[in-house]
Length: 230
Ligand SMILES: Nc1ccn([C@@H]2O[C@H](COP(=O)(O)OP(=O)(O)OP(=O)(O)O)[C@@H](O)[C@H]2O)c(=O)n1
Ligand SMILES: C[C@](O)(CO)[C@H](O)COP(=O)(O)O
Image (cartoon, rainbow, N blue to C red; front, top):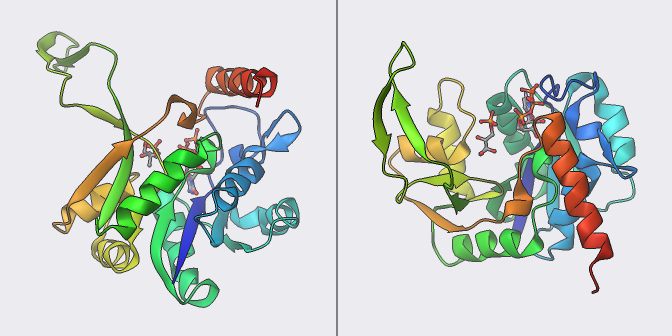
């Protein structure tokens, strides 16, 4: 029985604005993708990784990951949902004994190993779906079409969702078989088919790099890690 991670990495990174697929953007000389895949395999709880690459960059992405054992590359799709679906389709060949599947954004490459392990452990303990979450720290308002505030939302029960999201593989296959349209959140697809989604603690370092500001934050995180004593 093995754990396989799917890494959607086929996004264009439009909001980052560097004219290169975001997964291939380097931070201190190493791409987000290389860091994300190495983090998964280095957690010691993930045996195989299937990366969904920009379709026109499959060879580039394969070369980027050539030093990592058990990293496999497939062409991704137009939307994140398509990329995850294509990677999920490759699991039967890559890891036929997989019982747990993680879905982890390449853009969350600084996720600590402890979060990856906690997600895998919770699925192995019997949860059909598990997501890492953080409390919402901002004040949240609901507004109308004109932008006027309708109410102040109670943030106590709200959580911001990170990856890796973990699933019993049969549950994720069932959720994707039923998914008709675009959904950026895999656990949301499980909810739609009536599956229970559990949470574990996320981590601030698992931020999704979307904008230039996020990239600057990630560089600061890395610099802090490198300067902290082991
Ligand atoms: N067609 C797509 C779109 C996104 N992703 C991946 O899904 C993750 C989350 O998407 P996001 O952060 O929105 O990335 P981009 O789509 O690249 O960003 P943008 O919308 O700014 O272009 C990323 O790892 C991205 O590579 C993917 O595999 N296939
Ligand atoms: C899965 C996810 O990372 C959870 O925050 C997120 O939903 C990815 O897609 P999005 O386009 O950034 O919403």
